[in-house]
Structure formats: structure tokens, C-alpha cells
Image (cartoon, rainbow, N blue to C red; front, side, top):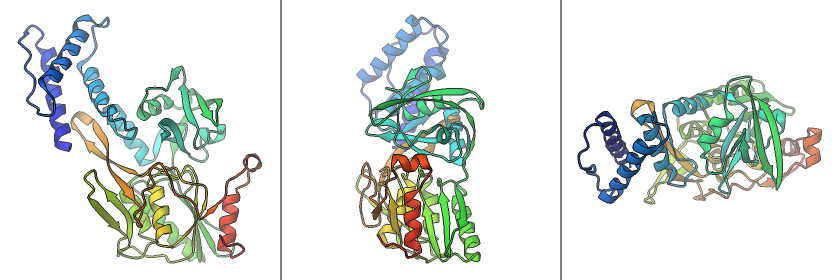
Length: 390
């Protein structure tokens, strides 16, 4: 697949650039030799390109704009909201989010019920302060209706210079809500921890970045030195992140050489990722908090701990993103993010579009939210303190 995409990009680039760099020469159209496309399909491409060049009102459309449109349309035709072509500017934005720092309002976007949806909202950000919630569907960003836009295009419109405003129209349970937010510099601290009562340590994970596993290990060691005997692991509003990162995080809690996730490719081939034997192990009672914003890599961790009977899951059904994307760096600073596999929990369960059900369901009421109460946290802590059992 990677070879095919690279070859196609090269063929399209040569054709479009050659067409524009030699406008005075009009030879008969000779399609590139690519068995994946027929001569009629290449001819149609040539006809559209010619009409744009000869008839479009604006004469100064650059070849790079056209090429990016072709490539974006090609990936968009897959109908997969998580596969995307990233031009150099978009790729820079994407890598900044992976690193954990970017300008915006502090939420993760995805697709739910074939609609652009808020996966998770990060704490202490404009999105959280405004009251945006996981599961809210996008209707409009500024003056632009989102219908027909990709997740990347919506994210780009939500972002902007720090201090500027963006107006979002969202749908929640049939009700249309308007939010006016001021963009801020967003820095996501993916790991935080503290000691609670009764020897319970609490760690919150807000993503799986490049440094998350190291930070998680250090936090476990610090809490252990403070007397941690039980762990309350909060994966709520965690949209996921790097597959390698979640495997490293899970390796601190799952015994050596035990399965963490099964990846299944398009041919049905399966590859099992195991916990590493060299990572320090912390064997202690664990309660994991999950909700509708627990997605992707966070679901991998929750599923592994559940399947190995290492934790009790408390809260709400998770988001249900059980597919894996691979990023391919391309020429000229661009990239391709492509769905390449589905993942299964160690027991072989696929949770894509289904999510993971908690062992103990605890759903906050509207009044709980208004009062600032957190019944899932309370129930999880009670379980660890021995005051309640699921």
C-alpha cells in the first residue's frame, strides 16, 4: 500500500507539474503507466485539470493547491474519518498535538455515528470552562457548516491565534447549543498523580504521548515511596495516542510477557503485543475510571487490565475506537495517516463502535454536574477502601 501511494503521488506530481511548466507544448495526453488506474480514468483527470486551467475564474491557482486537493480527495474517498492526507502545514499542526502543545480550545475530535464529535475535553481549558462535553456533535464552526468537512478540516477551523474568539454550534441530545470561546495555548500534561486516603494513589492519564510512559513510571515510583498500596487510575476524557506509548504504560501493570493488544490487519493476520519483561512491575489492587471520552489507546489499556483480571472498571461505556492509524512521512514535508489495522483486547474482543462496558456503571446526573460531584470517583475510591464491592 505504501509503495502504491508513493508511486501514485509521484505520477500525479510529474503530470501536474509538467503540464504547468510547459504550457506552450500541447502533446496528446499519455497517461502514466499505473495498472491501478485505467487510461479512461487518467483521461478524466486530464480533462478536469485542463478545464480548471483554461476556464476557472481565478487564474492564479497554484499547482500545489491543486495537488493537495487531489491527494486529500483521494484519501477522503475512503470514507474513513481517521485516514487523512496532511499537507506540510497540517502535518506541522498534527505533530504539535502529538507532542502535547498547541493553540486551540482544548478538546479532541473524532467521529461518532458518522458525525464529527467531541471525543474528550481536557481539564482547565476554554472548552471545559465553556461546558462542552464528550459526545457533543459539531454543527457549525464560525460561519462554516461542518457537513462535508473532514475531522482535520474542522480541527483547523477551531484552531487559531491565541486570544482570538471562535463560535461553535453544537448538538447535544437534539438540542442546539452555541459556545463562544477564546483560544488559548494548550499544553496537555498527560500524567498527574497524588495520594488519597487509605493508601490509595491516584493517577490521571490524559493521553499517550512520547513521554507518557516514562512520566507514568516516575509517578508510580513517587506514589509508592509515599505509601501507595492501591491505585485509582483515571482514564476518563483520554482520547488515546501512540500505540507504543500505551504498551509501555501497560507494561508497568501487566505481568511480563502477557498480551496487551492484538492487531489484526486487512488480511486477517494477527500480531500480539506483549508487556515487556524489563519494566518494573507494580502489582496492586486497581480501579480504572472510564467514560465516553475514553478512546483508542486508553481503551487498549482498560481492556488489557480487565481481561487479565487486574482491575475493576467503573464509570460509563467507553467511546469505541478500535482501529489503529499509521503515519507515513511523504516528500516535501507532507504525510499520510492511514488506518492499517483493527485492535482486539487480549481476550479477542473487538470494541470498535461498541466501546468497553464498565464492571460497575456509574453515570453522573445533571445535578451532579451542576454541583461538581463525581460519583464514579467516589465509587471507585470506596471499592479500593473496601467499603463497597462491584
